[in-house]
Length: 400
Image (cartoon, rainbow, N blue to C red; front, side, top):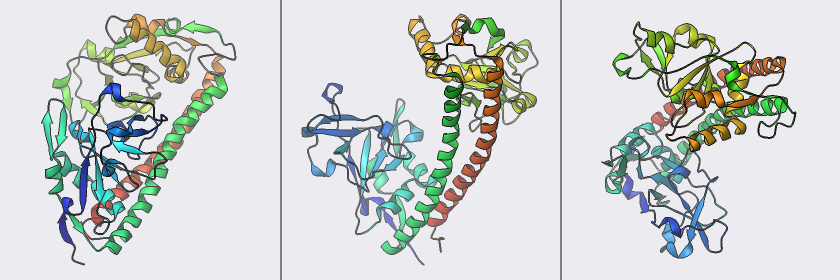
């Protein structure tokens, strides 16, 4: 079937978001309040957890209200996020778009909204949309005129609906598998609270001790290693690789480490505890055997803490990632002259000290859940790959 190409602007219209001052904001549950979506709300699924609102008179035209089936498009953001869009579901409140995003509304006589949604979120379209941006300082502003000139394949409406249905089904499977991975993290938090109680209130009355009592070695990471960056070699662990007690290498940098004292000092060993000490303070990870055996070093935004055999690093990581740990990091950061953590700050951290046998049981639960998580993540990655392939085929007219 021959599919014609049409301009985006011939089948859909961009509606710019409204502007207002910070002092104009009101509570979302106020009388005549209109929720105003921001760039942070534009996620894979519309994020409705943190909403702000403005008085109704700021919305001058009916078209500026959000309707089910609209798309919200990030039009002023960092370069890699320009063009990101999400679907607007049926909302139980009145809403509009703020100044850094735009509403993209389909002409439903010409294009099926879910077909447009999937086309907007294909990697090829996102690439084109980014290059519709004009860089100013750290923000890229998307030209709506350039975006409207982008061409998309447009089969008849019935065929659009068929393609959208196939993609919706594949997308639903993909999201369920992603959600299963997230649930494993929630499971571990539940296991921790069940075994040890809330770190803020310490309902089980565990002895509280200073982390300094259990530290046998501590160091910060390597600085100025850009010259050693490589396509292979040892992993160079950065702050984005450390979260929720685990190492994450979906974004990994390698180095050919020099043969010197700094490299020896910053090389990780199995069960080392890593803590972020700049920017997003208090992110943790425990080094696994494979990473240690393959060889890895930490950069200057991390601290490496080696603990005594009297305390389990997985327990410590979970404690520091809990609300009780985060509150300590926040207090340390606020009281510091310069944002960040030093060695004395880390040593001053305190945690409760349940029996070591319970800590080992928790570590065993971590290992079991992580093994399950690896399998779930493999399935999720496979679903992502298949969905990406379906998107590419769909807009080449190959979904027979």
